[in-house]
Length: 570
Image 1 (spheres, rainbow, N blue to C red):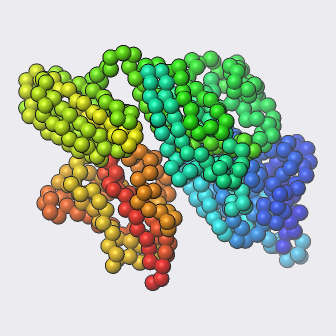
Image 2: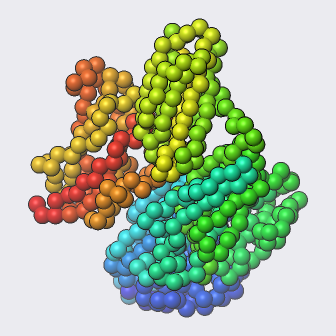
Image 3: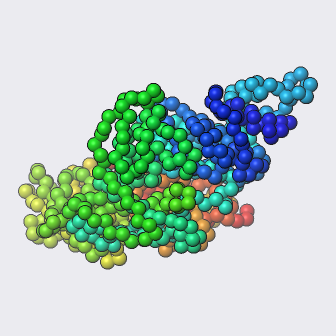
């Protein structure tokens, strides 16, 4: 069998570029993860992933990149995290055995290292996990086999930056700050030029006493899934983020010769490299309207100098200052107050409009159809708590109701009529909703829903590895997608209510949580029911099930979540 030293020499031949100077290979744990290197210069454009450290790197479009690491013992815990920055990634993790046998002559002498290197290079290995998208995605295993692990990454959209973290001690390593039980960012106060935000502290700071600081990101376009994506957006050249700081991410060399600005000070204006050997021509671009501020360990902050009557998106990131690694809270959005008299929002026929209402606040909307009409339909999707809606036609009150979830109201039309909609927020907290007004009910973006949006679980059909559920549909053919997520045994209804924004669709879910999607309807409303058996579950585990119905316009609505538990003994 190959000794450990021979294996390491073989891996060096496989990974190190020609002309590199000899490297020492001390490790954090020699037996579990041989490639943890103290000499950071070893990672100069290297393909080696260190144990317990986050690395930052880049991908040119349509140019795959491969990383390696070695696990020396079977039954070793392993966790790998890949963070895309400004573009979706395709990546997969695979493993192959290191050469163990002697050469074919039966002499017992090892094969030449060049032959062994060729053998490893030619083998594809066994695929363990793959993913495609822009979410922060994880591979976690409590018992991984020994071997040479390969991480292959590809960006098909554009040149991009990404981060990778791997560890063989996931139980003791906690580099990413933990989120609190309620990870939402709340809007507690709203003014014409200010918004006050509050959030629960990270348990990493309050319980583990690790140094945590909070960084707020404000912009007018959308929420961000990672601080890495924010840094990529802040970069002047939107193909790359700024060069990582040496010593924190094992990339100590100057990125300038790869097309990166040489100065990594995020507080200064970015420089631009006019030409480079490996890069391409870059030119100054308009600075993005995005702001980032780090505020220490406070968990309440007022954002000032905002524009009146403008919608902003707010993201909060907890950053572990020891590891420089971060975790994203569930972001929010808010529209600042008007300058003086509140402006009425104009609704366009058949277009979904997002509306934010502060606690006990009021919003006015106006709908003026351009053509004569017999009926007008208002569809409302309340994302959080219930809201009060009133509709007046030319001053006459036609409707006054409380809306929770999705509701649709059809009213009699009138030639040249104008409709005024008054929305009042909840007493519990800020409200977010989507509203659609149309004179063409057959072209709605909102899917039709049954009166009962509960998911029913059949207790007698439970097994140790599956559960069977059913839900109601309608006479309209819609697409239904079901997702599952394992939760702790003490997960309860109160925690379910604290789940993120109900208007967020299946595109916000992890690919691994998806069970299936299917189309379903029935002309007989009494028979509009469908069942599904969800398999591949673990015995005695609790799962949260979600069903999304997706309308023809692409808008999705989530049914009421269902908590189920498999049998422990069968």
